[in-house]
Image 1: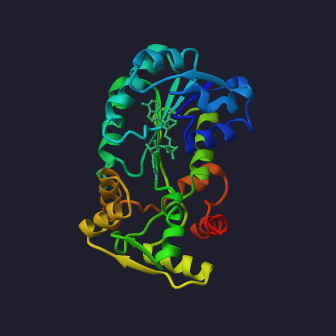
Image 2: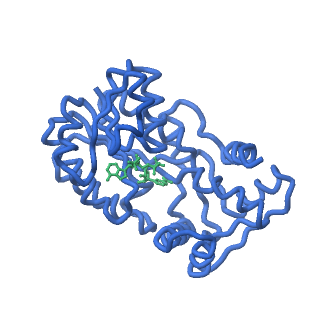
Length: 286
Ligand SMILES: NC(=O)c1ccc[n+]([C@@H]2O[C@H](COP(=O)([O-])OP(=O)(O)OC[C@H]3O[C@@H](n4cnc5c(N)ncnc54)[C@H](OP(=O)(O)O)[C@@H]3O)[C@@H](O)[C@H]2O)c1
């Protein structure tokens, strides 16, 4: 039986959808803070277990009887290292056979400050003695396609990623890879660098939105502090604006680039190109 944490989230739901293509629902369980948020999964026969990363006892109960656990990294940036440590300890106590963890691309060398908590979690896994596999996920294409309506409104994509190339893929591709790893044998000790087959700069992203929308869209490369201020001005909370701006600076240093094509190898098909994700975003912006 496979337990997925963060199963109420966007990636978690997609992983469960993938697993249900290959396993009966009774072999899959969703570990979530609020069981009501996955009532639809319960209706399909997926087990639902209440679990909060801040409450170790709930995690141990949620992992009981699991052969494998997918620990989807928490969305509570700044609290993630102790939260993930709770999950790792709980998996050990529950006797889980394999823990798969969604980390960040090139966690050991990344220039993105977001990488610190992932590095701490990978270290915790290494010292835990728990059999584990690391899925170092690159950027979601949705991080950029979510900005398509704003780009159309202002005629510009803004950022501070310079000429950094971004090898993104949509969540669905990372979810298919996670499911493939969970369904395969012999994964303990492996580390996967997962990223899109193709890469692009934010200038190329803007150009593609322009071509597909038929509107003039430029790329405005700003100093990091100005970009952060622009995001705050657009209504984002300061910590999120800081995180996005710092991540763009990391991307400018190559932090979101990878050409190993391990993601497409795992899912047995090319990753979804950014042009296709833009097409979808434009269709839903209409
Ligand atoms: N690679 C990328 O580009 C990228 C971008 C953004 C985030 N991420 C990372 O990837 C993860 C998955 O992405 P996503 O898009 O699925 O994020 P998401 O939709 O925000 O889902 C986050 C999940 O984490 C759960 N969670 C948060 N705090 C928790 C806690 N204290 N205890 C138990 N569960 C908790 C949430 O549960 P609730 O439903 O109860 O809130 C939700 O299920 C994120 O959490 C983040 O670490 C990666």
